[in-house]
Image (cartoon, rainbow, N blue to C red; front, side, top):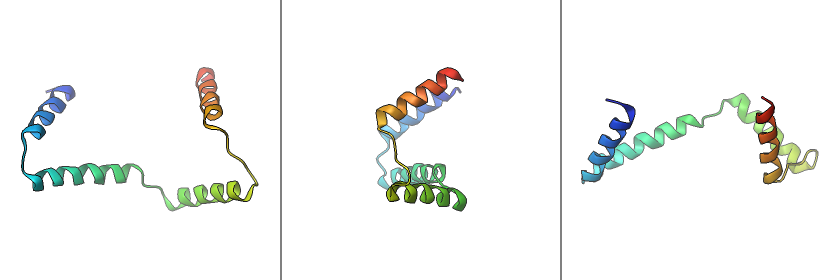
Length: 79
């Protein structure tokens, strides 16, 4: 069974499912996975906090969203 077929099969089964407890368990699985995907190490959190402190103190400044996106696009073109 391909990944697409599996997804379709699961969606169909979810649409037919009426057991709230079961659906809540599936939601919890997704939430647990999502939470694991964004876990940062203590070192990463410390680095992010240091960058935030520099920005708040005025030592550094951020870029407007549009400019940041353009810089990323430019870097991707060079890669």
